[in-house]
Image (cartoon, helix red, strand yellow):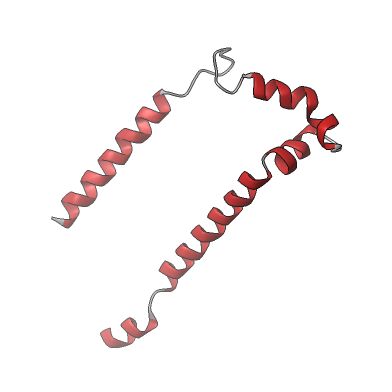
Length: 97
């Protein structure tokens, strides 16, 4: 029963991932949501608004700083979770021996 549930969840995730891939717009499509007025504002005014040396730094540090900080937090949390799973519980391993 556990294997059936695992396979069911994996198939559902695969369907969701394929549906997401099919929704990605074509490269260079002018109707792409990333080509909107916000992107144009960033390109035209990023350096002047933030007094940053370049546009990439302006976007990452000033416009998307909170998002970048939260992404780093998610990455740190996932690393801690993986390390705790790989480390295991030492008291359980002693009981099995």
